Length: 107
Image 1: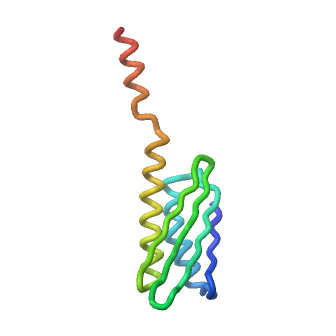
Image 2: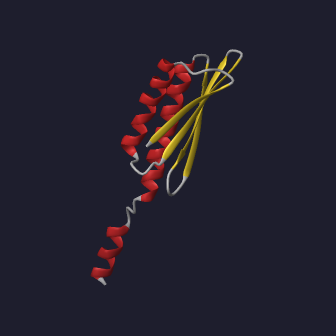
Image 3: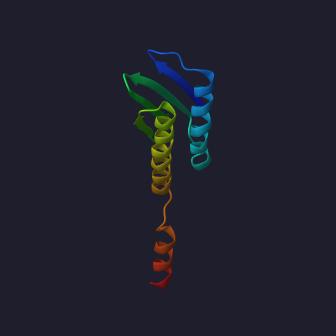
């Protein structure tokens, strides 16, 4: 998975870039089919915002996190995106497939 980190109206420091990439790489553990992810970091007075768009073959997921600290906003973003990916992966698996074959066998 390719992760692109950019800043909106400010330059992203290498330390902040590495932190964002490190936090968002754990999403790849849960979902191997992700193609790429684009992360945009913005700051508006005292509010720091991190938002990400992840493209996969089935669906495009979008999440954001806001906080007074950019590192906390990235943490919130990673947690939200991780929940969305796990929920999407759960929907992809067919949990009732075995029950239908058992039902047919008994009839």
